Image (cartoon, rainbow, N blue to C red):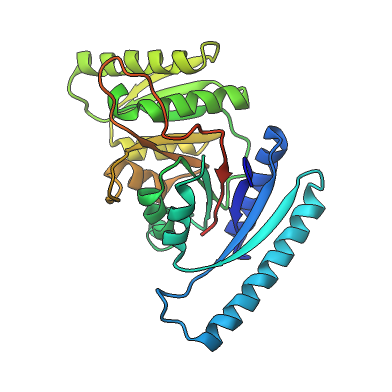
Length: 287
């Protein structure tokens, strides 16, 4: 499965949207797709009889989604796998050897997001690779890759990732600095450093720099309404911790595809890097 897109499927509209998104990405990048259905055993509390029934249902979901994938883009190599366990734990474990994850969500607004978006938020807090979250209504015409800028030391990996995505999609990169900041000079330094990080990653990408007032998560969510991809970083730590307010606000209110990128803290002058190259293997899952 090296370099395969791992797509979690459950038979929902969000699952199907994420599968279509992964198939298009696989076609553009020349990758295969591996479909995964996770049977939730509720931490081992599901009885053996019920587990067998859920296993059979999951197998049926996989058969239907494999058939859909073959019928939609027959040129893509598609395989499948049925797993058992708690979805967040299973997917978090898979991310340890993955280059990226792709998650479908039913999220369709702030109030719905609190109900349907919770698993994507939980997963974003534990994965150790960039996580794509694809809402069900993400098919409209879009342009640009937008990345939230905090400072280059904390969001450098997200900025470099967004720059590579913009180059891959042949889109402009929009560097967005939102919130009150610590002053005009500090904001300018943060944006200048972000531009430098992006230029080191993709020197030829066209960039736009934007500064706006208001909460960063809300501004990024507004930008996501028309963006091909909106990227935000989160601090990468040894132990999982809840997402910060910016990432949570964005995931609850996103209007298009979002990527949450774990960002190791950098020292001044350090190069931006991942523990694993982003293009080693993409794993996609759907909640």
